[in-house]
Length: 440
Image 1 (cartoon, one colour):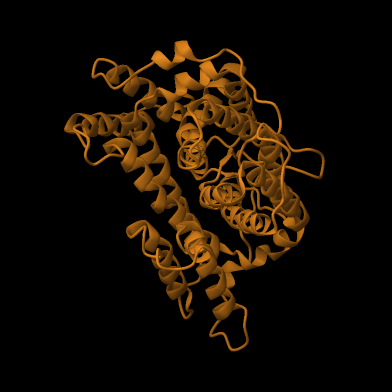
Image 2 (image 1 turned 90 degrees about the vertical axis):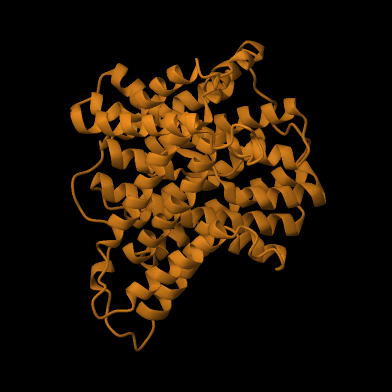
């Protein structure tokens, strides 16, 4: 693939995931009462670690690390609540110490976790991917309408019209163009939307001039890491939850690319998540997972080259090292990013539904498993405070749509399809992906 084409396709991946990636340090920093300069430091570290892990996943290191698929890594929201609680109880040194410990734990359990992949057939992975997509649509809606219902411009018709126009443009490009141009629908939609947003007063690039050209915090910025047992256990649970999310996403991409993942492939990919914990703990970053919106982009554009993801990783590293570039991307208007996100997140949902097509429903309890898993997973999306009266650990697990859906689908699949007396084997679920040609 020509370098120019690789660069544009890689940039498109970065623009799709950027807001979701930087939202994690923004939310954590605000709740943890960090000053703006420190939050900026966290954002730079977040992007740098995400870029390094993306490069690792796309290119791999021998037969040890990296799934070698067109996946993009970014900070997981699963870790935000535990990190906030740890920061309040033990301080920032414990936050990053427990993250390092969780990273080491992830490296140790990656292989045994991957060996349990038979317990993540399309029945489980399809249900989880569907919930991932559905739960993220609300994020896109928040970007389009605004996050403050009391604001004057909340859900302003002009913002909704702008977002609708971008979605329409992406559809038109996909329908009426061919070849390379048809693969750039999201990037062209973002560019056109930003140009339209300028005269509407929705853009503010003033922060670009104020940002430094080069910025990188020293390792262990907050001091020597500390390892309180409770904090370490909490972050290890986060790592396991991250594994379940990444497993579903990697199986989906493997299916899209026609490359069925072996247990060894999956173990290398999960080890990449573990490495993100170690990198994040050292560099003041965050635990990373495979980003669902980029899975959706692979499904929409049909561009399956892992080298496109590697270029995206390189761009993320640059954004982490050059704050000015990061500020340019951060200045993209919410309705513009939200419109692109809406298409991507809905595509993730469609990928999940397509995965469920492989499931045998006739004469089995699989329909019930899918229904209950999606229902339980969507509960915290429909009612975010539903578990507020429960202990913190229940809030962390039950309050995450992805975590609750994964646990429900996993346990129900065990109950109905892997215990004596099951009604009928789920024949169509024996393999997580369909064989075909390898990814370039």
